[in-house]
Amino acid sequence: MNHRAEILMLAVALTLLSGVVTVIRSAVRRARRKDPDEIERRRRMELHRRGRITAAEIIDLVEPESGIPDARARRPLMIVYKYEVAGVTYEVSQDISALSPVVRSVCLTGSQTASVKYDPKAPTNSIVLCEEWSGIR
Image (cartoon, rainbow, N blue to C red; front, top):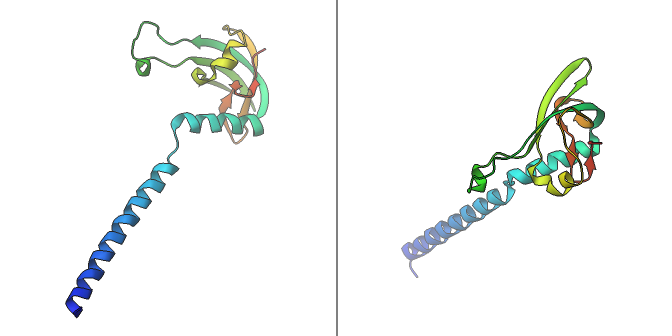
């Protein structure tokens, strides 16, 4: 084999190797991207494990619109609540659509007391329900 053929084979091999590396990088990036539902589930579980508890008042329950055939177009099931931390009142909402088993086991009404778990470093980051805990009485 002459020198020119060797260089050509080396160039082809490097091109193929570059393509394989690109495909592997792309697959790793896709694997690292998390589903938004999984990110939300992890947020709830982290607040459950590390959050501080305080009293809250449930203000409203916003139910999804019925009669809309496309499930993606529906509004989520939201619970709106307020609580106070260090003299500041926070009014927030939590999407509880993914928590149907937990939601079915509690009675939700407006103007109801509850407990909230919040992040002391970011008090607006809070939950009243998660997979393993319910602050609704």
